[in-house]
Amino acid sequence: MLSIGIDIGGTKVAAGVVDEQGVILERLQEPTPSHSPVAVEDAIVRLVRQLRSRHRVDAVGIGAAGWVDNEQAVVRFSPHLAWRSEPLKARLVERVDLPLIVDNDANAAAWAEYRFGAGRGSSVMVCITLGTGIGGGLVINRQLFRGTYGMAGEWGHMIAVPGGHWCECGNRGCWEQYASGNSLVREARALARTNSPTAFRLLEMVGGDPDEITGPDVTAAAIAGEPNSVELLADVGTWLGRGIANLAAALDPEVVVIGGGVSAAGDLLLLPARQAFSRTLTGRGFREEARLELAHFRNDAGLIGAADLARHAMVEPPDSARFGFWPRRRKQKVRRVRTRRERRERWATRA
Image 1 (cartoon, helix red, strand yellow):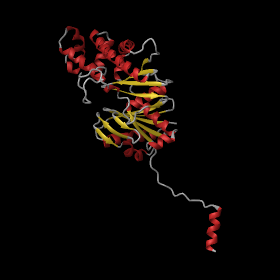
Image 2: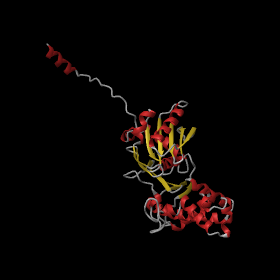
Image 3: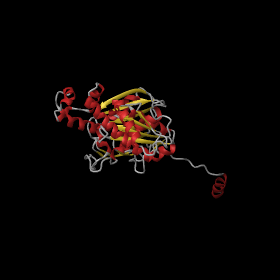
């Protein structure tokens, strides 16, 4: 059984045909046309039609950033796309003419890691995605846990430092302000603006303009051995490990999978995270400890997970019916078969 996964990003819409083993058979993408829902929906339809022309697929899964009500298949709020209460499934299911599901992109990525990646076979898996912020997902006993209102997994907005750095969510001191790509860039630019001789190499990589420093720049400099960049990544890893220790106290996972763009730093991030996790974990020495692992999938995790969630819904009719999985079909009249007694009574009346 083949399914199509769609990953709606701020810069691109990616689509792929995925088999039951999580292998992408064909992948296409288009630049995200605009923040207009209609333009994005048109791009999705084009990609699906191209893939269907070459593959026999049975369902479509869509991963979208933001707060997604997967039962109603509505994107309640997507900050990167500026969407509010967008009924994505209702607008698309008739146009693609296939069973369709919509879920949060971080949930989809977590599902991909659980089914085919670093979390495969675990009973409780926490997935953390480190990008501009911190997102993630939670799998418990082979089921994605979405919470009562579909908002579970927003790890980045746990308060790490009361009164700390301002966050786009409106609070101060959120975890993602200390352990994400944005925090890495903020601290790197701040260091570069001090005109410290030790920051010269990092500045040289971006042509001398601190405002041009990006997360990949810091990672590349750290891999090349630039000491300030190594230290900056270690700081992010330390904050990451402390936060994971808090999650472990609440959820007691078997494995914590770390993905997203920042995870490209590899051991430069993972080793400090493991050290901070071990130092901070409550009950250490009297309990089993969760494993911290880098994600197996990188940029395609959301696409693979969305496709597999759609396939999964195909084989679980109660769930698929619950959140409107199937496209509407024209109702057919059902002829009622009369019982023998009813037929006798009918003929007796005629006589």
